[in-house]
View 1 (cartoon, rainbow, N blue to C red):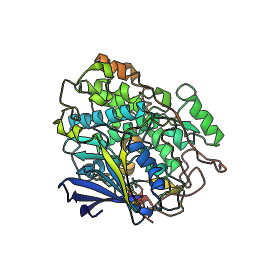
View 2 (tube, rainbow, N blue to C red):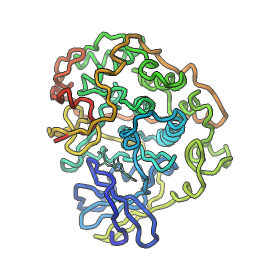
View 3 (cartoon, rainbow, N blue to C red):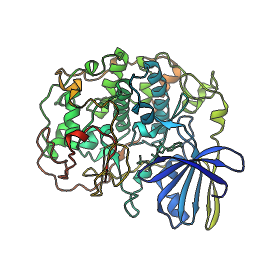
View 4 (cartoon, rainbow, N blue to C red):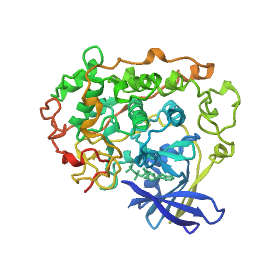
Length: 460
Ligand SMILES: Nc1ncnc2c1ncn2[C@@H]1O[C@H](COP(=O)(O)OP(=O)(O)OP(=O)(O)O)[C@@H](O)[C@H]1O
């Protein structure tokens, strides 16, 4: 690590602290993520999901892992540096972002998702904090480490973010897939457009209630599997017709509302795939698709190989070609090069009953008993949220408006996605009542005082 000069801590997550640093050898600014737990062998580091998945990703909208260094049993990830995350951009804002900005950002993220879903990976913890920004470039970060659950607590505990958690995960489905990322993106898009979280649940049961308040409760037509999942848990959905998303997002365009409606469909099968989303009318002005997600036959890109709908200079994409894994004890260098894709893909144990062990920027649960803290959500509307005042169901899906814009994007729509199986052991299920606020599905209370309900950071 002598090669790097740490300048400033820029992030403190559950698993690691992140620093802006300079590579003294070439002057390059990098991000150094110093992991909080110790690693006693290089093999252990190599088996981390974050390493396994990120080293296989080479996309302009996925943060590049340059090196992995183990020194004195401490693990460091050397990554490309990004200026901030989307939550930081949102939290002090009063005026919502222009829809064109949201469009450009989301277009980039959906491209990254199309790329990784095609390769059999899905993120499972999409949230504004994990979407990093530099100028108008957005990149997905924080891959899969949280799936690495076999090591000693507390740093390997799984922490997921409730506000963006898909209903099938909330209802403890034993099999779910990349559609969970699509749900999270719907919630994130809405939050970007309104500066308010769309489903700010204070517990898992309240999370489902918040969802029902917006999109109405599911029925045999909209999500039969969901009713079965609920029945298996002895959970009763609150009988709510829901609001109108356009009322919650008054200034959003009909295309934005339509896309969010389809992304936040109860039934994961009814959510569009990432590649389909790129063809949605909301993105009609965004035509650039990076070479990395184009079918090989499509030829070279017509715009520079940058990122985002606006396109960026080519040097950015070229920076991401190689990297090295290294350790100083014992010395060993291993090249990062894309290897054959794992058929297992992302595996992350989901623990739904308790809260995050420590610093986590969002309402989360993990399998520790520690309480968690939250920082206030900017402009959190609380009960003033208009979703609580309206009662009309959303359209089942907005897929009808998906438009075909090019041969390339048409081909993208046929990208395959590998399903994954959740490995969590299910504990006994208590009887749950609709809208139950006192305890979570697994019987552990995570209710917090009303004044703190709509805050983001969980406190010990
Ligand atoms: N490459 C980077 N460049 C700049 N900042 C970064 C980078 N990677 C992460 N960060 C910052 O550090 C924060 C924490 O990083 P990260 O999410 O990887 O840690 P974590 O311990 O896995 O967090 P979590 O609690 O979400 O699981 C991010 O929200 C972001 O603000």
